[in-house]
Image (cartoon, rainbow, N blue to C red; front, top):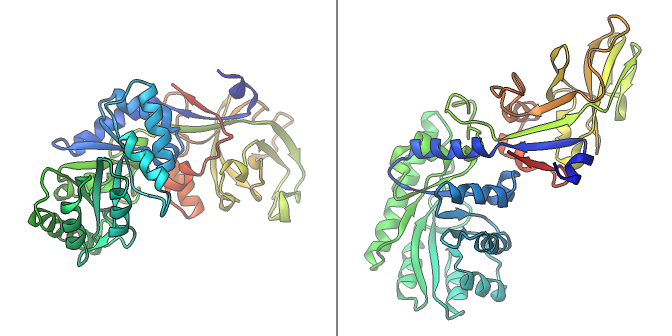
Length: 394
């Protein structure tokens, strides 16, 4: 354990073996196509260097990361680690930073192009560039809308330096089980096919078609095309736990967030807890102090709801956050006073979320449980975890 880990009272444990198992599971969902591993947002909070290394060793030959600055750093890392055969794909480009674009092209980073301005910016560098043309099939974010995509494809076909290696888009409602969501996805697939045909009509060939991320892979086989993008599924979470839970999909949560219980104390009935006194002890109560807060990315919306498991010598205590989450700490309810001995002790392990099937955290909450408690999605729970919380890899 590093010195940093030894002195911080919390840790996010990252199970690399689970990550690799999830990668294999993603290949099960889409066995006939190439897989692109998504490591954006510091690999969804798991650490992009360690995750990228694991994915490269697991056979991935292309990784995706949103911001160009991240892509440049990741490309350098991969080369230093001896993974120069692994490509990096990036899709959020600076508007006028030609130096960054040139540096990316020189590094061999594959770039997304959504409009003519981006294409011209790349062309002006006068260097061979690998680009993926993006069509907006209904997400409403980046990409050329369907009526403008043929002109973009035509311009790309005439480009002297930009080589089209991909045509891509992003599904907006692939995780929705209802008929309305399915219909929206079918429409996006239709628009995507039309864009691919428009690219072929102007002479573009040999490019990879990619549309499906995790939800598209699992629930929409007709969206697989030539390549799929492995995102949230890699990290062991379902894109929609209400549709299918991660464990039911054969995915293993990769991150376990733990902290030491730093104080246990008895308080009388009527004692208020934390700012605003929003929780009042209904009886004489044992309370525990957990050294994580919104400064670490713990949602303030977890007040009164965030689930935790405390592992004591006598067994597991399942409880919740009481009172408001503070910047560096929050309080949990350890139950009514019954005798002089507390149910837990300082130094006992508190698990906020992890894998309830794991041997050392049986029955613990999932990131999904925190998402439900906070009115958000599991993506946000893991990616918002602060950088000051140490990551430990096993």
